[in-house]
Length: 167
Figure (cartoon, rainbow, N blue to C red):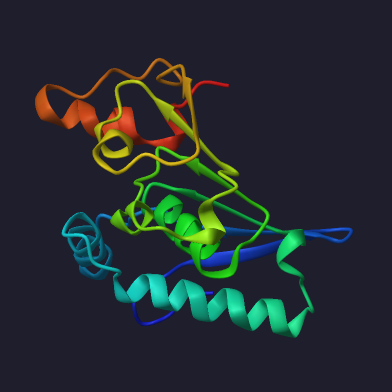
């Protein structure tokens, strides 16, 4: 699924369990960059509504009960996954260097079970910049294939990339 807001998601199924996966920021896309600015400003961006529309559609189409749906996402996708839990009260959320949006500071019964698991590297500034909810797991930062850390401020891009998260 991809729409005019550049929300990108895919639904997976194994037996009677479902996972909706949201993609992270595409730095070459102005809509994604606008979404990031909107989140940091404390707003619910249009991309969140697109994610909601997609999940509602697949839940109805495939008769998926919320207890059988898990959401995952990296970076911006992690924020969308948390938004989906807040909206529908789904089973679990797993984020990878995800940004936790401001909406979690408000009382929301769908978030009270804290079944939100945030995996991040200790060096990642994006996942530290948001709010705190759920359980955090710090994973090793590991450059793959003999790559070198980018110089200066660009190193934070390496720290944030999901493919540099250890096993």
